[in-house]
Image (cartoon, rainbow, N blue to C red; front, side):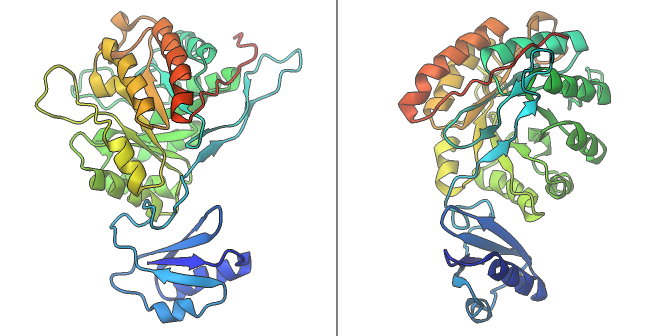
Length: 363
């Protein structure tokens, strides 16, 4: 169910409706929009008595939401969700070496660019890559601290040490940090040190992890599962949102098919399909989506042309020596070329590539 408030409804009237929903034994989810506030209702097993709700002060109408993914649906919120991040670091004062960048967002007119290595291997490696992607204009730095690997003998990540390195990168270069949490323990640490919690493809239907991420009130980047349908993808997002965290970012990263020319099949058709039914922003990961360095740039261009809100790309200065995902990692020079190309494409589809400016990055 969805309670649509009148455009002139006061905060007190909105709160009174939320309190009434709680008294009924359900959970209210107020979602402010440009013209109105809508209040989603979850926890109801059947039809809610509309009459009691419609009679409350400030209520315009009560609508039945037919989709299973209520809170992620455009039925609940027509406007696109924009996940905003404030300024990082300190403004240059002539003596500070801290990086500083204006606030950025995922969603809206500006494209979001997330770049960095698959894994944080050392402080030197992480800073070398971070400086180059920051210089090229990325706003977010991705790096694995906890790595879900097919083999138990493969490199599993540096854990807390990697989180501390990335926190220092944020302070020095002004990049926001995106990194994956694998379980409840790592989720707490990632929420403490990072700006965005990534839930990987293998955990897309780890429902206890999704619910806990929803309770932490930190933006969540949710990757599509290896063979997930669009509805399964959105229902995973719904798990996060049902706990009160509405800052969810979807990420298409390829699905398993019969094709053998790429690691996965990057499904760009899901971008407009998702945007038709959901208000959540969506990024595309052409690195995991193809598994091939020579395919990353073409598919990044295609992702922006298809309407994605940004891309997430793996970058490594020595991919031949990378401890994970070297074959799909682009060189920094290729990343800079990609940024130039996306800057040309963005205006054609009504978008803008806003490159942040970092000040002195000396360590």
